[in-house]
Structure formats: C-alpha cells, structure tokens
Length: 352
Image (cartoon, rainbow, N blue to C red; front, top):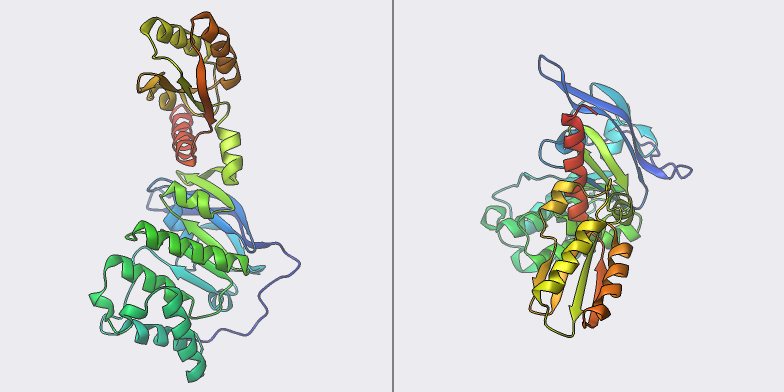
C-alpha cells in the first residue's frame, strides 16, 4: 500500500468537507450525460443523503468522489483540497463501504480486521490488537470473530465490511446502501453507531433506497434524477417545500357514518382541491378521496387542509354528528421523494 504524502488536510476555516461544482460525466459515442452539471456541498460533521432512482447518477457520483472515476469536467474539493491533485493524501482520511464488498474468504473476521489495521498504518501490534477488540465489541462481532468470511451471512458480512473501515482514523465515510441484507435490529444498531461517530466529528456521504433511514440519519438530502440535482434541503425542509399544503386528515366520529353524510364529505373534498405544485396529481389521484376506517372513522388526503377542516366542522353539527378525535399528518419523505422524481420526469417529457 503506497503511503500518501503527509499534508494537512482539514481546513478549519472552511465549513464544507465536500464541495462539488458543475460536475459532468459523459459516456459513449453520443457523449450522453450521466451527470449534467451537478453542484452541492457537504458540511463537516454531518450526514449527507444522496438519493435517487436507479440510473439517476448516484453510483457515478460516488465513483468520482472516491477517485474510482474521472469526471468529464467540473471540480471536487474534499477537506479543502482538489481531489484530483491530492488523491493519495485524501484517500488516507476517507472510508468507503460499497454495495459489492470484497472479502478475504479464508481469513477469519478477527484476522481480517487485523489486516486492515496493518494496511492503514496501525503498525503497533498492541495498539492494533486493542483496536480490533474494540471494533469486535462495537459491531457485535465477538461471537463470530473466529469464523471465516465466506461462512458469514449477508448481514454479518455487511457488519464486517463497515467495521473494517473503522480500523483507521477517518474524517469522511462514504456509505453506499450499507444496510442491505440487515434485519431491523442490526440496521438500527448500525445507524446509531454512525450517528455516534458523526457527533464526534465524522462526516458521512450516505446513499439509500430506504426513506426512513434517510429521515432518521441525514442532516441534508440531495435528490438526483437523470444526472441533475432536482431537490436539496433538510428532511423537514423537503417536506415543507415540496409537500405544499398536502396533509392526511384522520377523523373519528362518535356515531356510525351514513352514506348521505359521506356524500357531503366527498363534495367538500372535491370542492377544496386546488392546483398544487407540491405532490403531483397522479400521486393524489392514486389514493381514494375517503378511506373508511371501521364504521365511524375516515382518512382523507387533501391539499387545502385548513379549508377542509373548517367546512367539516361547519357541517358536522348540522347533520347530527359529533367529532371524537381529529389528527393531521404531513406527507412522508417517501411520498415527497416519489412526487419530486415524478414531477421531474413529467417536466422533462414536456420539454420544460
């Protein structure tokens, strides 16, 4: 393993760990853009979620940021340094957990961790042994430390794969769908461990298809589609920006609902709908206007919440009904993601 030049990397005067500017990548004879001028920043000590459908450009971006692929144009600065001029030095301070890990099949888990510590320059045998012991305990690998890598389950391999990266002191960790194959308990353990290290200053670049993970872990999220960044904000900011007025209202009545009253409710919902630039019409229309829950409760999705609730409160006593409970929920991050991507494709198809 070639040792990188010893240069100071962290720029304490700069709050941005990664700065990507107008990054482009073209492939093939027709020079089709896989990345078409994307720009974003990742702050130190945060988790940055990079989300998008298959083929959107996530993998290409990740390969460029980890020096596996050169861009056609644009710039990438990591730790305040030009990635393509200081590659070796930067690589010493990053970790990468890819979707398709490689393993030393005949090595035990313990020996594999020891080897990675040695490769990362942890030459003191006692210090390396202590580090291996710490990692085995942290990632709940003690019971399988003497098992060979090719004997492990998919979930166990994912844990070992992540654990290996923590055998060196890194400042930036790239995680490409790290929880694939993990059960819910192991997944939460992994996410909590990442959160703990972020609190200690680690920066994480995170891709996933599981929106609950993104919402739980990420400080900021970029959504990419067809090689372009189509949304960028905090999880809450995305909901506020792209959810618009869309809400789910659940109302429980004290009495059983009858058909005449339901017809009145339907007319209110239909009359309240307005053109909304948040969740697209296709998504709204795919959900029934009124979902009955038992005989006395309804669940409705509307894009003019205050108007609907106000009108329902007016007609309830007039029809001899009484509300027992009412709750209002914002759209989920998954709904926002699907809507933003769908709207992006609609705009692209219409030539906007």
